[in-house]
Image (cartoon, rainbow, N blue to C red; front, side, top):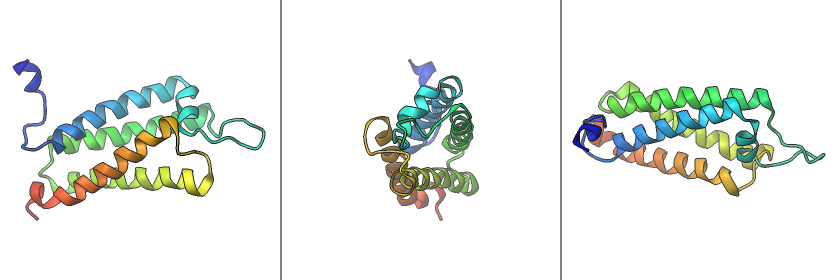
Length: 141
């Protein structure tokens, strides 16, 4: 067990470990989006007037790429949490994700506040808040 724990980010507090976990989950979600339109259709669960989903194979792969890029930035932040540039970039990934998901829900109507869509809203908003409130603790700035 100690050997497994040695792979976790070597910093105090839960935030770096959380960022590592979220990045691994995001990478897994990316692969789901690459190989199945169903994942993205469940996430963007709103429907067009004809009853079809807003997502398609292309938008699913695009979402997967965007999510994988965010996973890389968040993983880098988990292991470099005292670097202000990396910290701020990771913070921005959560802000951008929150802005995107709220926009899809309230602005474009491609998502409804139910099912799989709720999780990214919770993760983005809570982690953004956490990172903003802990910036000084990790960066001393």
